[in-house]
Image (cartoon, rainbow, N blue to C red):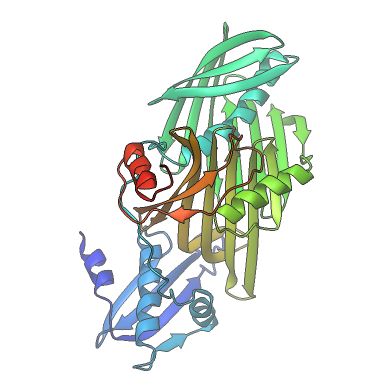
Length: 407
């Protein structure tokens, strides 16, 4: 642990908090930044800006300490931005503690939980790339499967099934991909998939052919944009959104209710089995920027599994999005899978809450009366939470039997 980490951990006896932004008045394109400075514990000071990877942790510690000490001592909040920030990030009240465990069970996918969502967005980019180079008719991308960095694209041209290799490399929260060939044609395409709060951006390019492509799904603005450029000339553009059907709304409301989530206002339909939603509340400060609170979700539906990624974040947006600083963020991954025990069917829900890079898992059981497909609404009986550690699917089954659900 470095010295600055120790200093942040030991923040107490706050005297002054100052959230500031500054810019070089000579050159307004550089040195624009957002930072925080505090004085504490009889004259000690710490100052960090948004470019430091500890900035979110620093802000969280400041607010936690302020909420603990504000009744006992006078703490100066310097400037409107500081006051608005303190009001926007509320006290984290102690919720009723529910049982959780640090490790998930292997029955659920243990790989990077964000990866399956990113690969789903990648399918549409692959379709565009294949159409751009081959102009196929009746093209269908079936699946993208693999492990480590070696993957395969499974697709159909009418009734003819084909496969081509693909390289996928995870880097932080981004997914990078390389597609060198389509059968005997060398294309040298590389690209990236990036998830943001309520947005997904997919970009790809081929320097060999001077081709660039982009797909943007932006649920915060209820907007989709797809385009391909060759030699800086747009050869393909599409901003039409898929309509949300009555059945779509039913299935989304069904799983949001099971997950204890509130369905946001904006919904973007990626395909028949996947969606992005977003709801953003902003609190403006004309001089300092925009304080915002965003709730977004990503949903993947199949017959045997449903995945939901829920993200709640609070932050500061400046210069029309030129600088966006996340000040507080909670991610939750929710997965539903079917479990059969002695001819009885159950829906098992795993919630993985990620805070400060630590994972907490909880499990919930929904008895089901008959065999169902998870990408359609169905009836469930009264659910219950598992209140002891489970390490495998077998231990889940033993827990259910112990409750007397199965004679």
